[in-house]
Amino acid sequence: MTPRYYDAHNHLQDGRFGGRQSALIGQCVAAGVAHMVVNGSCEEDWPQVLELARASGSARHSVVVPSFGYHPWYIHERTEDWRKNLIHHLDQSPSAVGEIGLDRWKPGLDYTDQEDVFIAQLQIAAERNLPASIHCLQAWGRMLEILKAGPRPRCGFLLHSYGGPKEMVESFARLGAFFSLPGYYAHERKERQRETFRHIPPERLLIETDAPDQMLPQMQNDFVSTAVIALADKKTGKPLNHPANLPAVYAFAAALLGEPVESLAARVEENFFRLFGTLIRQ
Ligand SMILES: [Zn+2]
Image 1: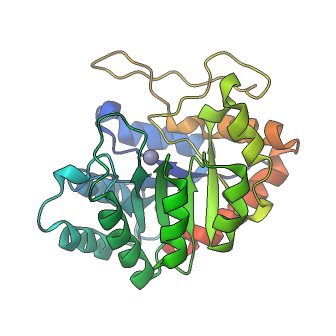
Image 2: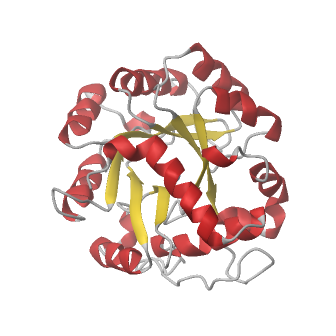
């Protein structure tokens, strides 16, 4: 039996997909993808995420689990009513809070206000006990302090594409963290991140595509044996990560951890339901 795959983090609403979303969902379902958490990143794309959740299934079953949040890259665009707007979207459908976070890495990005906006969204997630999907680049010390101080959702949170120090995994896990592995870490130079993922507690591991970003290596290597699906931005011709590459990311994770895909997939399924299960209509 083919395993059921769960994408803990992607951005299916991204404009670079150029309106091909329903075809992409069809290809994902054909590849065995059971659910994907689709992360909005600003007020402008939240309605699109909601629409994908509605369009991707019946009232009884939806492939898309919507997630709404202000990504640190876009908080400068927020309107006066952004909180109200966020709560309005969270009220429309069972949903997660994300993508939210802290970023001290992106060149030219202002750090001012990032913590305030992040904490305000954590507060909303904590009040409603909704899982939060967190982005963190070069701010791991502050991230741990903020999560420790709270508020944080009791049901847990996701550190997507975890790239922090191996030594901090346990502290985050104690606070309720899950950690998702992207295909991008199959690139040769990502050995530090692969080494970290060999030490993630088994019951806290999740897998993600982060589509349309974080492509797997095009050339097959020690970790990637499954061919990567080609997809390009219609306007720029640049390659995009297809969300149906999820089984290839699972194959990478299985090779990395030295275990059969089937047992890994069964565990990731349990983990996915532990974090996002309350949001899923079956
Ligand atoms: Zn993301």
